[in-house]
Image (tube, rainbow, N blue to C red; front, side, top):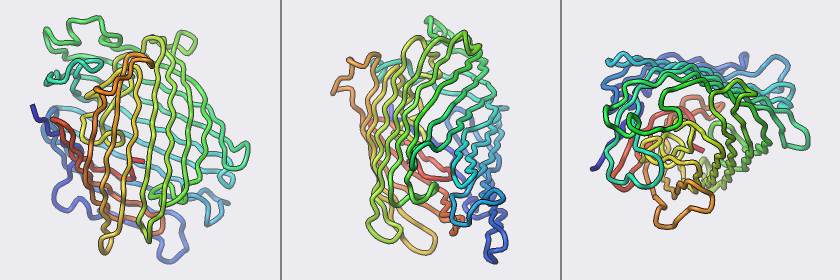
Length: 360
């Protein structure tokens, strides 16, 4: 069955700033853009809300230092669902400190397609999930552009609305009854991108591990390892080829909501997030972004991905592909903040994705 996944598709004039304060006088180093949102997804019906991004530099920071950012969004659907989120990134002390993460609350309905590669023809089942979310990463430079940091996760999950006789209802799937997830860990980070919003040169490397268990107050006992590597090559003014490799490995018993998830706005666009999920995942994706005219840019992208229950269990025949096209609209020229609208497609699946910032 061909499934269309429509994610944050705005209508009308939502690409035009509802409020914009751009620094044209050089007297202020902060900028704000707000956008109305109207969207439709198969699992939610219509939704309405607003999103905004605020960029700034802390007092005493150099004018050429990387800007900090706050992104605030909220939406309500006709199915009485709520999305509220505050991603953030703060640079302090001449970028000696890099603090980033997310605060949010979600009460939403999601599709579940099972775990592993054995559900190619399964059309999915719905379940309800509500939780407050905390994602906190605090990093400090220790050598050159290398950071070392601490991270903490918290999701207090309530799961409901299971389909009678479905995969979640009938199986002893870890996390099917919800519970508190509290996890702590560390990471190393190298960030030499020339711009955090629209990089056209440089590279990014992050390697981290996080542990959830009784010592952190969690109901779930597992450890997650992840590697995120990106490289950017400038091919002309505002044109860039980008490559991203992402690896994720889980040990122990992670809840089904925190397995490695393929799909969504960042990894393997064209698949619903979690269309394929398992303990291990490997993804390689690339994209080319190029100027069109005025504030518009175009993009083409594609990727290959695979999930497995064990590190030794990856099989070539389970490799999936995605491809797609996209548009970028420049909201803030000084910081190169863009709205991204992508259309991704894959075997039996497709989706629209609208958000601020690049996938990688």
